[in-house]
Structures are given as C-alpha cells and as structure tokens.
Image (cartoon, rainbow, N blue to C red; front, side, top):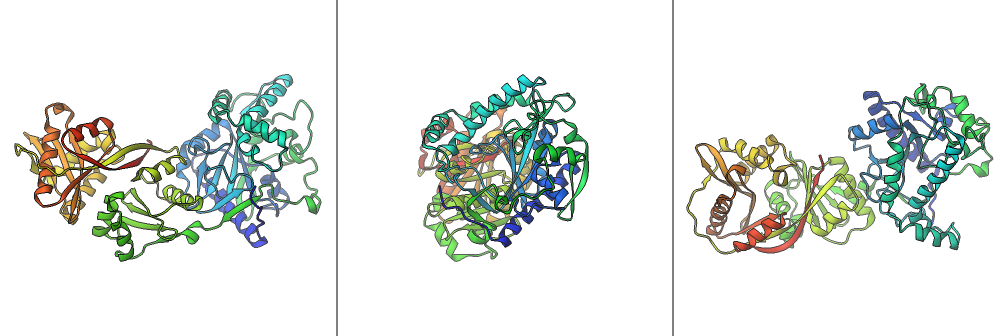
Length: 545
C-alpha cells in the first residue's frame, strides 16, 4: 500500500467546501425534478450538532429510496459537469461498489490501498439507495448474511492487496476476486427490482453494512432495516449556510445510528475514514494548458511529425487554428497529449505514454464537454473505453490508394442547396452519422466547403440523392474522404463505387493522396478489392443514446 498522505487543515476544509458545492448542485437537480433525498449518517449528524460538517468528516452521505434513486440516475446528466458527475458500476466499468458516488470534476483522490483500482477518482459524496428487505427477522438475518458475501466479493479486489488484512485473508480475497463483479451486480439487480416506495418493508442499503449495527447494536428486530418514513417525511436543515433536506425525525434516526449522538467522541477517535495516498484539488492547473491563441507553431510541428495519427486534427488545426468559435485545444502534460474539440467531437493526439493522472484529466475533459464522438489511434481509444461505459467503440483503419480508376462521370459537385439532403442521408445511417443531428452536420459540411474549399460529390436522379462521397479535410499533400454512402433504395447497383472512384480520381488528379477512414470489416474488404491499402489502425467512440 502506498504511503498515506494527510491533508492540512486548510486543505481539509477546502475539500469539505468543494463537497458542499456538489451537495448544492445535487439538491438543485433533485428539487427541479421533484426527487426526494435525505442527507444521511454523519452529514445529518453534522447538520444537527454542528450546523454543517463534522470538523473531521471527510465526505458527505446522501440516502434515497430505490424509486427516487432510479429517477435521479435517469436525469443525472443534468448535473453541471464543471462541478461534478455521477459514478456507478454502469457508467464506470472499473467501479466496484454497489452504491454510487458524485465525483468532483477536475480533482484526484486515490484511497490508500486502492491505487490498483482503475476506476475514476476525485473528491466524492456517497449516494446510498435504500431497498426493501424481508419482513421476518429470520429472513432479514439470512438476507444480511447473503449481502455480506456479495459485498466481500466486490471488496476482494481491494482486500487481496490490503496490508491491514492477514495473510490468510489476503489469500481468501485473491480467490474471491476471481468471481466476476458482474455476477454480483446481477444478484443485486434481482433484489433492487423488488423494492417499492409504497411497500411496508423496512429498508437498508444492500451493498453496505446494515446501518442499525454499524455503530451501535439495536434490537434484533430493528438492526437490519429502517422505516421508509425516515426517507419520505423530510424537512430542511441548515448546513453550512444552505438548506438541504433531511429526515424530519432526526432524533430517532440519529439515536438509531449513533445512540448518544450529541456527545462528542474522544479526540483520538476524531479521524477521517477515507485515508488518501494521492490527491489534487485542480488537475487542470497541474496538468492542462488550454491554448488561447489561434496559431501555435510548436503544436503544429508536433502534429506534423505523425500526421496520420489523426489527420483531421492536423488539417483542422491548420485551417481553423487551435482556438475559435467552434474550436478548443487542451494540451496535457508536457505536450504528451492534445485534445482538440471541434463542435461536439474530440480528436486526440498522443505524443508519449500517459500516466493515471493524465488519463484522469482526459476523462474529466470528456465529462465536462460531453463529446458525441472521440477519435484517435486504437491504443488511446481503448484506454478511454476501459474507463467508461457511456460510449460504444468502433475499431477501424486509415486507408489510401495511388491509382486512378476509369469512371462514367455520373457524379457532380454538390451545391449549397444539396447539403440538407446530404446531411439527412448520412444521419439516417446509424453507423456513419448516428451521432450527428441533421442541422449540425449540414453546418459542418457547409463550413468545410466555404472555409477550406472541401467538395462533396453526389449522384442524383430526378432531384433524388442516390450516392455521396465528400472531401472532409483538405491539405497540400492529401485529402480525407468521408461520408461514402448510397441511398438504401439504390444499394447493390455500384453507385457507391462510382461516386468514390470519381472523388478519389479528382484528388489524385490534383497531385494529392486520397485517404479515408473505415470502421466496418465488410467495407474494409470492399475497399481493399478496389486497391485501397491500410496505413494504420484507429478507433472512435460514439456516445450511447
């Protein structure tokens, strides 16, 4: 385990205040959508006893009944991404807990002993969904034993490396860690689906030790669950000068959790419960530089050394620059990575091996900007995909050809009036333009035409668009072809090949090299049959709908 670091008093308070901003944002979204929640555990105790944080408490806790929780999950994208984001096992494939968290954007907070867990980190708030448990005491006891086993399987990945565990326990956890976490989540889902806000069952967080026996031993009949009214009968509390919802009957719930809750613990027991080995309050300040000027000779020289790693980035940077109305550029580390934002997409360029902190800030930039598509070489896209489940990944290749083809000259260069039809045809195909809106794509294609002189070739008949191929990016030495598509009514008749041949011929005629990206295995073979050769492997991520 890495060395535990201790935050200074100033840093500790700064962390609490950052969490407070997250609580305020969470409260805003819940009030807007009429979703019930309660500050819980030490956070409710802090509101009652201290009118804010317990001075030594290093996180905040929220609890919600299952139906309220699921409502929040569905609208969690309404959280301001510049403040925080929602994290659970469904959107982060490396997250190993049954409850969820809000994470502070642009921060780093690695729990001591969890350095090898690759989920996203940052200052956090725990969100505990409360689910129904059996009505009988014996059923609750058996349920508790079952939940203990599920919880330990998830914890095993941490426990097998923990210095605080005995040698025998570490070996036992090593065996448990071989059970896929997906097995546990499927078991949890079956239990979650049984919960109803209007049932008379007691509730608890199924993926956390029973609250009624965590700090104080309640009676056998009450220790395993809590009444639903603690999560529905709410009132506002002053917390650090803001109003947050909490259980109205605070006295009963706090006695249930802590017994004599107004009594301060001995000074040697006033400790944070989430020791940290690595943290940062501002990853951007430490690792990111946003380019403010339109031109940047040094960056362009870096891109020129490996042009084909991300052709679009290179050409767009030459034409639109590194900063503008629809363009932003972020440089990570010592020029180790470039994130180029063009409209709602990101193009990545990697210039060295990235460490965990540098990857973390790229993930935060993705969260903040909510890119619809992200492209780059396969290695970096794979790395990003392993850290998020909100995108689907497509692997592809960059291809080129040298030889001109004989053509019938059926295609013509599209005029401005044709671009709406082009955008509709492309957007109708999920694999090619599914992440665009028609208006957004039309605007981008027209901008490329008028700003960069890019051409779009179309074949039409009686004003009906049959096939399209466009020059999406234009350079002195090569042009990038994109949007090769045939109207479904006319497929299988060779129109796709004809419009592609005429487009590539026009490029070769100008003394340039035609290149294109392909993310379909069948189409790659089709291109190869026409003389196209692979230059390198690439990949893209598209946000799931």
